[in-house]
Structure formats: structure tokens, C-alpha cells
Length: 335
Image (cartoon, rainbow, N blue to C red; front, side):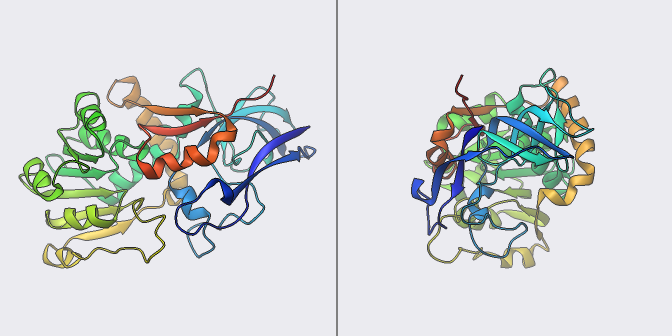
């Protein structure tokens, strides 16, 4: 059977374009013992994918030229030579930006579409949710009554970070771009305040929104926003470095924090989070978040775009701030 997949054609310099990938027709290989064939239904689009395109040392091997573009996915098992999975099972794994995949049973997890929509397993119940959970609770260590600020607050990770912080009794302030996103954070997700970095002076707005300073900052953006937040941190503040989407497409060196001496003055800590480090504890996080969803304490929002052929332009929505919630690509298979 022939199917389509997006392969990395060349490494980008600055912002990727459609020319950095090629849409190829390939043949589905035979399924060997311990493998399954998956019909992919939804593909997760995440800022980390930009880093995976670079040929440099990182926490994970770069995507090779000519290889299928790496991505988290959910789909349905259509053939199985595995004792763990049966035809008709729905599964999550890193199957790539393509219509079908034949993969080892290792690293594949069963999901239940009766408990939540399949696309939710790429958001709140997937890697973004896990990133938010562990990044905030294990690295940020919020305490009841503290002020937590999160950038990229209307994105897949940021929305979950803010809601978990509220569940833990914190004052929560989100930084997002645009009135609609800020209104959503406050009116729908229960944030205490939201700052529109596109229209408000960030320093003054943060001062107003965080009158007692900032105890935990969960950073998805980096750059000038990180710099500004560092001017408002409290004694023994914790800064969680999850991402730096403002810097990923730079053609010049990454802009580091000019105000890093604020860490010294305030005896504060800045630490990175890579979600894979917490893999053994994923079931704990999933149970907690499923409970919070059932109790109405944790809400999810997915931004679904249809059509595998639209992958390059849809991915770039992340870097233009055009997505509202978790960005997901729906694969539409021909009848």
C-alpha cells in the first residue's frame, strides 16, 4: 500500500518554509513480529519540532535528511504481530508526519477514545500536559498563595500550567498575545489576570498584575519577555525553562537573559525541564489530570487543522501565535 509522508529535505536557516520538507509517496513495509501497523489520525504540532530539525547536540537525536518528520501521533492499529495490541486498538506514539506507520510495540501506549477525544491525547493527556505537570510541580514547586506567571499562556503547555497552579492555590497570571486569548485565560480557565504582550507595556502590566512580585515563572517564550519577568521576581523564586519559541527561528545567536543577576540578588533558581526525564511517572500525572478533568477543574482546548498536505504552514502557526490551544493536524485519508 502506498501512502504519503513528509520528509525533512534540508535543514532550515531561520524560519522554516515548505521547501524544508518534501511530501513523498512511500510503500508500507511488511509487519514483522513485535510490530504493528497504524493508521494515523491526528498529529501533534509542537515548538520542539523546530529544534529537532537542527543538526546539533540536544536532548534527542535530530531528524535526519530524507527521514520522516518526527511527531507525536494517535491512530488506529490496522495490523498487529504484537501480543500487546490488537487490530482496532487506538494508540499513541511518535509515528511521524505521515498517513500510516509500521512500528515496534516499544514506546507505544494504548489510549481510549471513549474516555476522551483522540486529539486530547496529544494535548492535556499527552506530552504537553505531562510537560506542564512535571515542569510546574517538580521544578517550579509552587506553594499555596504564591504568584505563578506563565508565558505562552494560551498554548498547549501554558493553559495547563496555569490551571494546575490554580488547583494548587496560587495566584496565576498569564502572558499571551491578543485580547481574545487573554479573555479566554481569565474568563474560561480562571486565571487571576492576563497580560497582552502585543498591546501592553509588559513591565508596567506585570507590576500591576503581580503586586507581590513573582514566585514561579514558567517560561515558554524566552527573549525579552524572560528578561522583563526577571526584574519582578521574589526572593527564592523558581524559573522553569520549558521553551524559548521567540528564539527558535533566529539567524543570529540566541538572546540570553541580560537580567540574570536578578537570580543572584534574589537567590533564585533557573532550571530546564525535558518531559522525557519523567517517563516512569507518567501514569501518576495522567491519573491526576484525568481526575481534575472529571471534576471540572481542568479544561482542554484543541486547535485542529485538517489535511496532511497543510503540515508546513500549519506548523508555522505556532511561531506566529496563530494557534488557540493545542495545535493538532487531522489526517484525512482517502476513501
